[in-house]
Amino acid sequence: MQGPPTPSGGILRAQSQRPNQKRKLPTKTKYTRFDTLVSRYYPAVYSFASRLTDDPREAVLLTHDAFSTIRNQRWRRCNEVMLATILLNAVIVAGLKAAC
Image 1 (cartoon, rainbow, N blue to C red):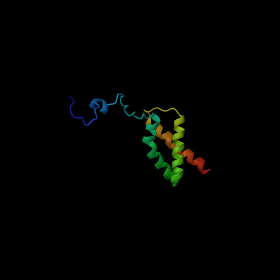
Image 2 (image 1 turned 120 degrees about the vertical axis):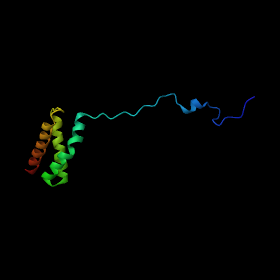
Image 3 (image 1 turned 90 degrees about the vertical axis):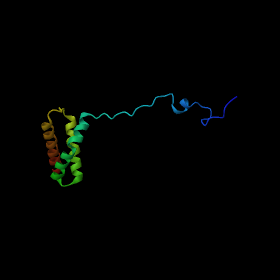
Image 4 (image 1 turned 180 degrees about the horizontal axis):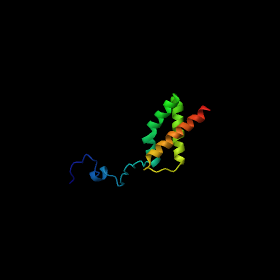
């Protein structure tokens, strides 16, 4: 004597709702120290480069060159004044090279 069929079609609810495999949680993006540096200083360096050149395209190139220069050097997070000085000097040098 069986009762009326269930709406789930005879499959147990616990099996149909939960798969046997566990879901993977989304991984967090790990930012490097250089990415943190770029996100912190990019607006200021770009602003300085755009005032120096009056051309947005060249300002982007100068900013990119400045960060490429700093990427090749070793730096410490605690000495931010030196970092800002190196970035601005790199923009000036790149601007002078482009002008010549």
